[in-house]
Image (tube, rainbow, N blue to C red; front, side):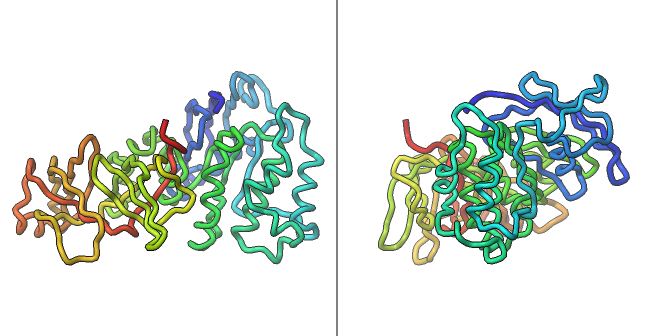
Length: 372
């Protein structure tokens, strides 16, 4: 993916406070703007797209100035090579899906190696929807069409403004895989706005965490940032977890189970048919979904018992819980258990133990399509 960057500076009075943002975003993969409602995430996307004129702003894309309050420069939205997918689909109700796509395709600018209509239909699995009108589509289908129409405008940068906020869990699960693969399929970086931790964990490569008053709290790669105090302050300990890098080693079609190698240990999760042997994926395992045992368990339904060594115990004196960090090879697992369990099991740092994980608790994200 081409290595480009976006410099975004914005000082905007917003909802009783000032958004103060001054960051250079490396445009590779998906970067998430993450934070609570009212922190200015969508406003920042609108600044990039040229849909927001208020405040003092500067937007520079790979050296080209799109906006500068100081220099008196403002490139209108239609001249910025940006495609934006909104919370609502904004499709033309009187046109079929094919008509909506063709409308965008006919008006797209001439570019080298354009994204074609056939590519979009194939990548977003739209062939069965082409003759339908938007009112007959599910929410997830509408957003797939909206994404396809946006791709056909030949953007160099994709802006995703909470495209799943209006979808139920089932429709969100249907849309996520399509959003996940677009950047690599079309060599198209994306900036993604969300306040849903599961969406960010699944989609983003890097996250910029905004405070409630629109300032940058912290930023960095997903595995690092999700384990910081700033993230815990926002999400709460209930959503704390660990990211693991694992490799697919088997697919059991009889029981619909995917087997994974994790530091020499075997993990099992519900089958993902799109994965191949040798694929590397990133798993997010919530600490609340991990139990600790001092002996290898027998006669229980939990399929994952991972051997490791307790490297740290973090009690929460004003709560019932403690976090136990289990070192497994070069990686770690985090468990959230009661302080009473820590005491009664006699858990101590340096002690061998087992992490017990239900197979249904995994959040998965493909990191590397095949093993080199």
